[in-house]
Image 1 (tube, helix red, strand yellow):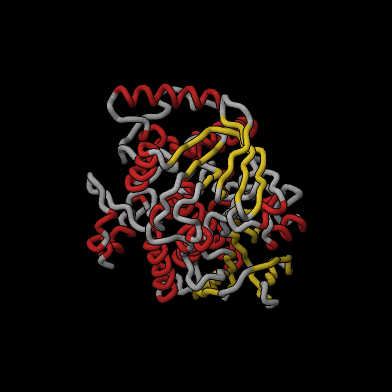
Image 2: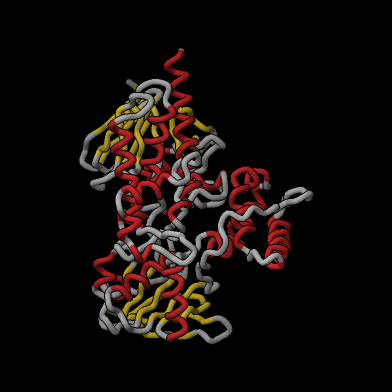
Length: 466
């Protein structure tokens, strides 16, 4: 039986294992390497609290394109649809708790392990990988406990690194418990005093999670969120509205051409009473093919100049979260600022933020607590993770040209330092998104997982047939 290793047991790793067990031509031994107790949770669905909800309705959480209601049906069978009254919103959509989706993925992995079309063995190795090296045609993986394992095919299914502190930080401020560098450290968030004056650096989805938790914890002090553009995630609108994005025109091959087209189409959609949502959703559906047709120079421009606007329109928030954020701004306890952060100083008695608000003078503002919510660090060249660091140094992988993950070919195979894609090292999920433009949303991450799984199945099948 051929051994397949999947490094990372969050959603993507679990999805690779499930898709591979369904696609394999012969029984495989599939091992998912994940230090958490369950496979399928990861950071997104394991490092969360009960008040954190998925930012799309349950029928948009699609693991199997051919079965779009698979998760919703599981929620119904588990009794969660009836029990979770707060998940239901006007119009009939249901926004589940994030932890419930994690439970669903863990159950799906277990069910697939018990029975799958290929008769493959699915196993969970509760460990953390520290390095991997070539061993003949396959890979020898070393774990942090000193043990080793051999895999003929290896899939990297990790997520991005935690947020980085991009600014100079004074020594005392760095040591202060009131500077929370990791926004998913919920124990640190819970320790924030009820009336603390809080600064949040970043205004995206992570900021929304932290604000939700602070309020759930009873925090009633002022919160000021700061980012360069002051953009916050938009709320959902219409779903499932078909929209002709390109029409009879050739798809634009420049960043500015795409921007102009989107603005024109949004005006048309607004005039038809649809809003901008169907336009963005249509681009999202076309992105896996369209993205590869753009010249690299234009993809780089889009990633650097337009990504912030894309993110807040693409990665929206649940109505429950939108009501809280909008209510906070109206009531005055939450302020969203545009500004440039220069540095952080102070000590455990108080922190000082050196920053320049947009169109104002540079200043220092005192805060009781500062929380870094700039989002996952997508540049693997800065990765502090020992496994990716070793792989980069050894030349097995390289950063993609957009600096948003690992460079891969169209099939998901990792491209090495010399520019060659090997036959046995694969990348799936967010780390492979540069080739398709988007692999962070769940359907796209599942598509990426399935592509890698199909590639592994074909590669192993060819080897077996020979």
